[in-house]
Image 1 (cartoon, rainbow, N blue to C red):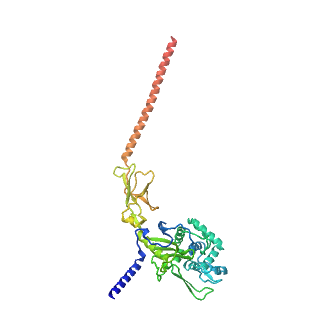
Image 2 (cartoon, one colour; image 1 turned 60 degrees about the vertical axis):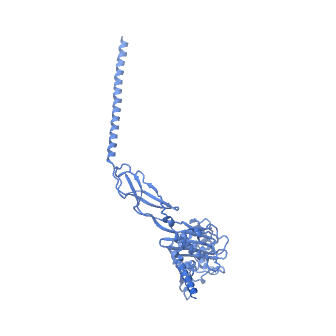
Image 3 (cartoon, helix red, strand yellow; image 1 turned 45 degrees about the vertical axis):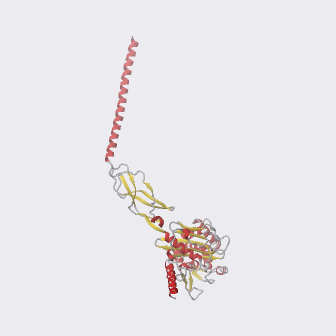
Length: 433
């Protein structure tokens, strides 16, 4: 009996520890990650660097992830305080089985309220109302969506609706969705909405009670098995052909990552692969990457020789004006990898130069991202007057040489003239004889 209790205690302790450390999964090699979802991409937000990918450019159905684009189009093209009156078509056009907020015909809500319903509980009736409000019709709004996708560099995306109702022509990729999501998360209104775990709609002109709507993103739900404390958004999606889809964003210190998961299913025990994979991928990303100062302000990175300077000051050390803080793999830091900068000096660099003067730039290219700092003179560089004196002497000698040459030329001409005159006299005298 004691052994059984001891074993159960160990199992319980192990379970607790696994929960505690579930947000900091570490894997030295991405190939060791057990990712079940068929199409996956992980990017770091500031640099756009790809941390992990799996069939990221395979075209798939996005389902309600479509509403990420719908949301950002609405935010950029309307006023949050605008009042929208629900029409009969907007309320009744949601296909059976698709998410809706149960809005009433002629019910009046603000754009801000509808955006919360769109992005948190994935309401298609809200999507239709917002599309009509912004563009006058759903086809016009879809045209705006596709134009924005092209503007963001999406090459394999085509939208047919503002809500993602299943359509063979309504496609995208994990790569394109990452671009859309990364752009959307730069908008503070969008960012604020998708970070909420729930939202309340208070009584309207058509209702007498408040309504609570929960976010479908379980990473934000503290009561969920899938809760992830670093999660800050953004959207789920599902249709039978699309499978379980997720775009998620998480933040830790100064790092943010976006995870895109398409086509996920469930584990044998009935758990959601999209949320499990997302937590694993976030754990890997935060465990293996960081922003670090690879060089600090005032570090000397190179030395150059300054023209026209004194012997004591001509060799000038160049220091960084600001620290180079780069997104790097922690393994590179651990091995002491040295990053070689590309140095560009100002043209016609010569003495005198004052301490602290900007004399060029140092650029570090790390995983395709450039980090640049000005280069400063680390001391005063004095002008060499000896060189000026030497230059003046040379100029003086050259002038004398020119003068002597010109004078010789004049004397030679005079001498030749006298000789010519004597020759003429001789010729004349001979002729007189």
